[in-house]
Structures are given as structure tokens and as C-alpha cells.
Image (cartoon, rainbow over all chains, first blue to last red):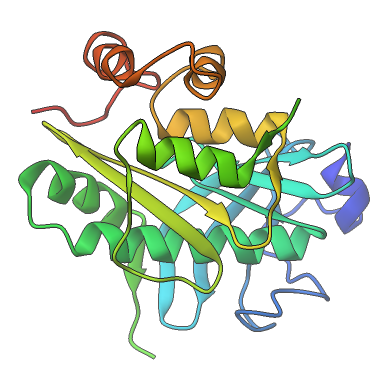
Length: 129
Length: 99
């Protein structure tokens, strides 16, 4: 499956905002852009991904299409995933999981979990609205 | 045969000791387990009925086991002791941080 076919002939950064984007998190946030290194099965999240949240490092997501046509996005940093009937829905689901994971880790005082949390904070940070 | 989500959640909790996470989400049901040196966390989406093969692979990574071992966990071929041993000897993917 070609990501380029889904989003049109996109070969350039900066980021593209899908027209049907993110019913949950709003339409104004730059969300998905084809990866310039591997445009067929990888997408990138970067910068503002939800109200009050931004990725300060690029997060590469692997894109898989399920047998029923739905989409599965997942990362190889934190092993989170998002799924949905559309790519935008899968993105919403992934971002929701990422924010939930942040809250889960932030709540734990033990040193090993806090070390993982600090690593997550290298990617994801709250922004001033 | 695809693993039913409810069965997955039951075995995850009853056999492997995962507990529902404190934080509630509109989108996902999270489960967590703390073993010495690390926190394991996994989740499923509200409304899903069964795990696809791809999704099994993703969740297996969250549990730090290979997919085959994951499948054996939920067909009763691997018990909690075997899982803990696997986490100590050969977590996959490896933990980024170990204490």
C-alpha cells in the first residue's frame, strides 16, 4: 500500500493536514506526513498533536492495513498503537494512547518508571496554550 | 482462531497478575503490572471484540515477549512463572532501562 496514494503526491516537508483530520483533537493540528525515507509504510508525528501537547522529536509510526481494511499505526519507541477505520481515526487513537501513557507514567513515583517517563518526555511535552 | 478481547483481559488479570490502571480513559482499557525494575503496560480499545494477528504482535511487544510466546500465554501453554522467567532472561524488545 502506498501512503503517497492516500495523500496525493507528497514528497516535501513541511507537514500536511488531512482534510478529514482528527475529529477528536481538532482539524488544525499538523498530524501526519509521509516519511521521506520510507514513504510506503511509515508516517511521522511531530510538533503539535493535540490541544496542549507537542512532540519535540519526530515519532515514526509504522502503518499497517488490516484484512478488514482498517488501519493500525504503531511506534518502535514506546510500543504504542492506534487503530481505526480511517487513517485519521487510527491517528486519533494513537495520540489518545500516547497521552494516556504519559499520564500513566507520570503518576508512578518509582525510579524505573520515572526513568521511562523521562525518556517519554524527550518526545512529548505539554505546551502553553 | 482470533483471541477474544474479553478472554485476553481475563487471562491477563487472572493468570498473569495485571491490574486495571487507575486512570480511566474514554478510548482504552489499560492494564499494568510492576515487576522489579520495570512497569509493564498494555491496553485494548473499547468496542473491540477480538485481537487481529497484527494487534497480537503489537501487544506482545508491550508485554515484552515474542508473538509465539504471547500466543502460548493465552492458550495456557505458558504460565505466570514461565512469563516472569522470560522477562528476566530474554525480554523482547529489551527494556531500555533496567535496574
